[in-house]
Image (cartoon, rainbow, N blue to C red; front, side):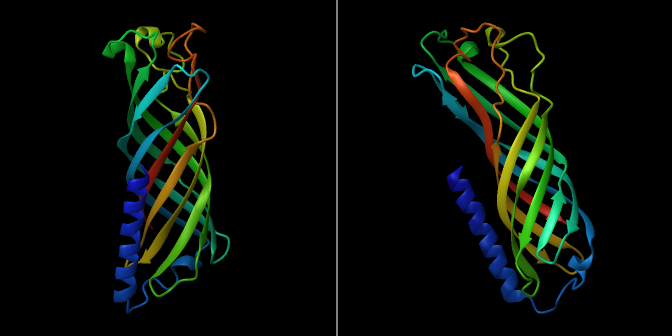
Amino acid sequence: MNRSFLCIVSVLIFIGNSFAQKDKVINLPNKDKKKIHYGYYLGINKKGFKVSYELANSFVDVEEKYGFNIGLVLGYNISDNLNVRLEPGLSSNSKVLTFSNPTIPDTEKDRVRKVPATYFRIPLLLQFRTDRLDNMRAFVIGGVSYDYNFSSNQKNTDDNFEGEFRMKTNNFMYEVGLGVDFYLPHFKFSPSIRGIFAMNNEMVRDNNPASPWTLPIDYYGTRGVFLNLTFE
């Protein structure tokens, strides 16, 4: 995940330098003077789990997968440098968990769990922007979100003993990131990279308190990297 983060930051810096060198005409000079603005975004993500343990004889390997993000932007300019944003959208991703525990049978159906997840996300964010330099400006962004997991299986009566890994439906995340606004002739293009971190434990414990899949685990929480491309 760290290598992916560095690669994406390098790409953003390269794009920013390219625009800074080529900008000659000031595009959309009044774009940020409107109090309310709209847009949409799409992008990719790579998400896994942070796992902490109650017992030392268990380990879960989390194979992180790539997914996609898509959503809308509703923003309000508090000032030229401060913007509050609501970014409702969908985030889809899947993960593969491999359990290592001496009490779990050594077969793929017992040790491996595929965990698809589609979230409806409602992030509420604050964006701090630098002063505009020609046709670009940098920003940092951060806030919290409510995430509804359509694939949670929380109400499923089957659990890991029947091959079903369950997660909580209602979750809360916080996110921080950085990006660049590029003012093009007809619209504003804003690539950004975000770090996403769960605030609550997303795991639903198995019905049997002594379950070898959930007893040794103290915490499952989503963490990931989002690359969003926003158009306004």
